[in-house]
Image (cartoon, rainbow, N blue to C red; front, side, top):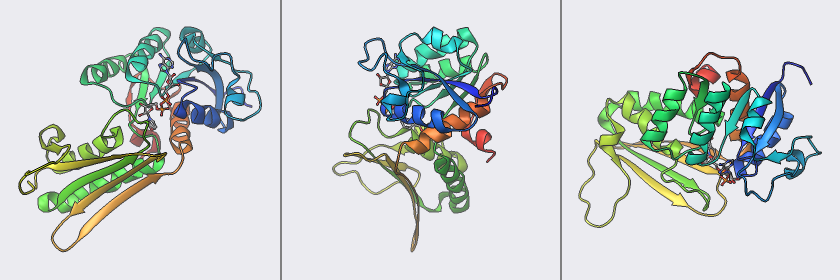
Length: 270
Ligand code: NAD
C-alpha cells in the first residue's frame, strides 16, 4: 500500500451503502480505509469493518466518534440521512476535511448549508455516483436539446422497498437536466402523480412515476414520447458496488482540491 493512499472515512458504515463503501475502499488502489463511523447506538459498533462485509479484518473498527475519525482521514464519504449529513458537514468544516455526499432527500435549507460549506472545504455531492448514470445525464441532455418541446417527457423509477424518499434524487436530477436543456424550470413543470379526471396531458409538464418494492437497487427510464416514435433511455443498477466505486473514485479525486462544489461530471471529465 502506497504512503500516498487517500485516507477515507465512511459515515453510515453499517448501512446498505456503508457496507459497499467499506468493500470498495478496501479494494480500490489509491484508497485506504481510515475510519468507519456509525450512530452512537448502532449494534455494529466495535465490529471490524472488514469482517462486517465478509472480508479479512481491516484493523478499522466501527466507532461513533466522528471528530476522531476525521483527525485520521483526508476525506469523509457520507451515505446516511440528511440530518446526520448536516451534522457531519459541520464537523468536516471544523476539521477542514473534504466531503463526498451521497445522502439524498435534502431540503432546500439543507442544500443551502452544503453550498455555504463548499466555500470552506471541497465537496462533491451527487444523487447518483454510478458512472453509467453520469453518462446517462449527458445522453439526456443531447436528447432533450434535439427534441426540444416536440415530445412529452416522462420519468419512471423503481427502487427497493426500504427507500425513504420519492421520487429518487436521481430521477429529480434527470428531470432537471431535461428541464434545463429545454429552457424550463423543473419546479414549475414537474408532475408527481395522476389520479382521477386529470384531463389531457400538457406538453410542458415533466411527469414522474415511482415504483417501490423488493430489492431493486435502482432503475431509471426517461421516455421522450413523440408522434410516431418514442425514445427511452434506461439505466439499471444491479449492485450497490457501482455507487460505492464511483464514490471512492470521487474521494480520491477530491482529496487535496481547493474548496468548492464539484460535480461528478468534473470528476469524470464529462
Ligand atoms: P441505510 O439506512 O441502510 O444506511 C444509513 C446508515 O446511516 C445506517 O447504518 C444508520 O445507522 C447510519 N446513520 C444514521 N444516522 C447516523 C449518524 N448520525 N452518524 C452515523 N451514521 C448514521 O441507507 P442506505 O440504503 O445505505 O442509503 C443511505 C443514503 O444514501 C440514502 O439517502 C440513499 O438515498 C442514499 N443513496 C445514494 C446513492 C448515490 O449514489 N448518491 C446510492 C444509494 C443510496
